[in-house]
Length: 135
Image 1 (cartoon, one colour):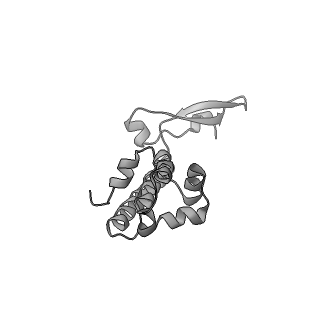
Image 2 (cartoon, helix red, strand yellow):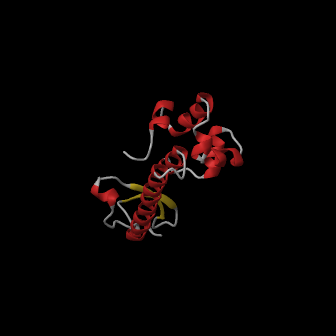
Image 3 (cartoon, one colour):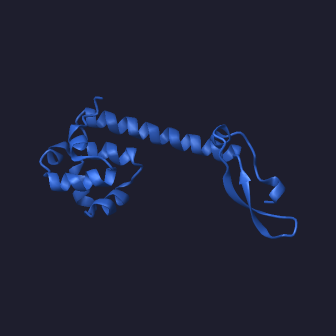
């Protein structure tokens, strides 16, 4: 896109007086950086994505509250991780992490294993153990 065509639509960036760095072509045909206050299409997609993430977090919290899943599932969603990312953070195989999603297995985990999860989520073991989904 040309430097003069860099979008300046209304977005959450504009509301907070933040600019996004974009690349554009100037009058000489060279790539230059330009600041954008937002692009309506991008804003719509981002808002839809954030809405889906918030819904997944609510569902995970309810599933923990209902005893379907362990708190690991909730904190994985809050931290916007997928299974593969969490496995990499805690250095465990997928089958093992998935097994820890079961409350019956999770409740038997020792503090050393829970510490790995707590570190990945940026919380303490006490916070991880205390989360019931009912707050």
